[in-house]
Length: 222
Image 1 (tube, rainbow, N blue to C red):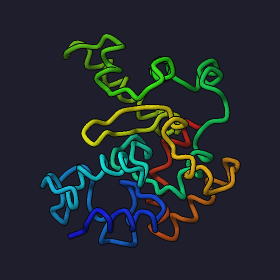
Image 2 (image 1 turned 90 degrees about the horizontal axis):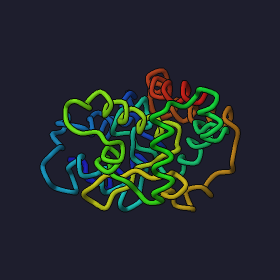
Image 3 (image 1 turned 30 degrees about the vertical axis):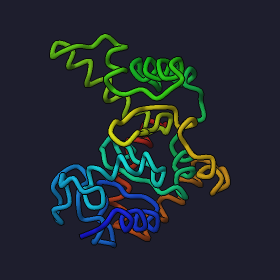
């Protein structure tokens, strides 16, 4: 059974893990991190083998980035050495205000961003929903739009997840990213960063499967 430290090592070697890819290293990449997997490693309560706990651990320990990076699906992981490459590949150069004025950013995304910036500290989903005034089933459609906005802002690497070990919270990427992660690579243009990510995908997986994971971010970037 795969252990937490082994999982960290394998993702670091791979560079990133997407829920879409058919990875070469089948020992680590044949299971889903959102439920019972092929190795039976989920919801057992052991922090060394429970994949549900792993996402809290990596965020708290700053070992990997974890979030809805790949088309909004949960369970995506990025190794520190690749994190700045993903930022350069998928974070638009325009400011949030410019993106909103140009129609490239939705109202929910803009309101969430403004709330996070104003609060100047990580916010949980319940706090964000409360700020918007959403309650109960009558506001379910609005709540789903809010969830979508939070995922979109992760795909553009504006917001990131953090954890205290039990709760998942949202904050600006620039507030949460360890400085050393940003110094592992030179800053680069979008095209160069995309090429590096695609080349890595060819080394570790079926590249066509992996490229599917970037469609959402690319759409939001353009």
